[in-house]
Length: 281
Length: 311
Image 1 (tube, chains in turn red, brown):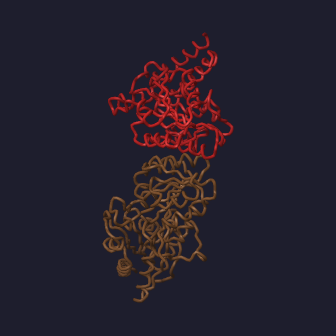
Image 2: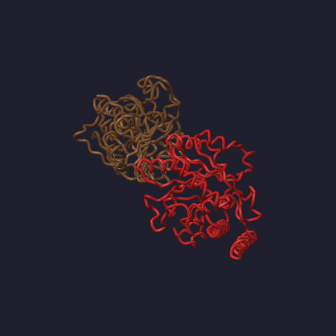
Image 3: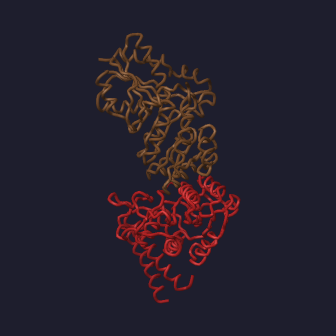
């Protein structure tokens, strides 16, 4: 991945971050913190890695993505809209009664959403099912999933991880959005899932630790995951909750609250400033 | 002849299993749920998910998103109880093609006792939008129910029993229509509506009542949701009194489903034979049926009781 490509992806991710802010601001609810922390991962996946076709969302040979932490729908919707699955104007209607953009993603309403999620711990199991089906059908698609670090407190996650390694699902690559915060505070204060790396390894996964905001590292980890045979890959992506908006960064309070008009303007201004900087560089 | 509906379920899966789209999952109970009959024939499309029912249901959903028809089996207690929310959010909400084969429903589980005797599954499963709930009466009907579920898109909950019970229907003449009740016996004084293993008890009750000069109609409801409103309303209008029979808690179950139709369309006196809001216990199934008031004799007593207030 060269510098030019990185810059393009950075621009794309910043535009997606703006969609996150607009979505949550207009809905006056939603989850900006974890959406912003995972924006770079989704950008690399959808704009540099995944085999998808916005004109054929149900293409059976497509790569799949499951947002296991479904509350971060704003970043998924922003990404899918930018990818052309539906018009970007729809994002402003996020969470409204006359919109198809449900608070948590619905595969029945939103083109490009591969699995309905929202209840934590279930998406990773569905991703395991998709990977199993891929093996059964001898398809070459990959299944990607994104887990929250608070989410892994759900016991079902570990059932799914056990199952994925038991069936040697090397076509499954999961990300842990490792921002260290959940609604009630630090994950280590609420209910520590540590040591996460040891646990994933003990459950038979290939574990790669990266910086969630470094495009090269994201891309290389995915490539390594694809090369790893006989076991699924967990990319532990150390991230900053609220990444890209200074006053949201590393603040648990922004897990599930919307900015007011002033905060929204400030957030958009910061993101625009960053876009401008990218242009000048 | 006596055959358990779980046995018929496993055989039916093996029968339709040649279809490459069918995938069967089980949670370490394949010998009990009888999915091993499918596994032995099509091992490549059978996946043991271990003792992890929540993961099994959501994994089934994921497989179904890839165009498969997935049968996921475990005991009714775990399918509808432990995995309720996975069934609700990952299977029913996206309306995926997952058929839940839930065996060991009700108190006829017997010796394993209350912890494994699910008497709430009809109530919780029928409360989920998009879910079709089937409760076949015997082995013949089970085979047809499984085939209907296989041929119909969307989520199904198929309630099955552990205990071998009488085969009531004749395979050569039996016709299954999803969502339609079956009039097993004609009658004019009262209608007994039964589901699952209670249909064979109700048949005995009809014979006892006949000897006493009471003409009881017997309607078998294999599809609890969507329920056959027409056959219930017709029975209410023509016979004026109804007794429901289920091997399930009387709260929220089959009797409640019938009552919902009656009170909104044609209110008539109703009695519900079922578990009276208490947990089961260990024991021989026949002893438990007596203890919990689910025998033909109990149905007869309820018929006589309801006839006292019939207008």
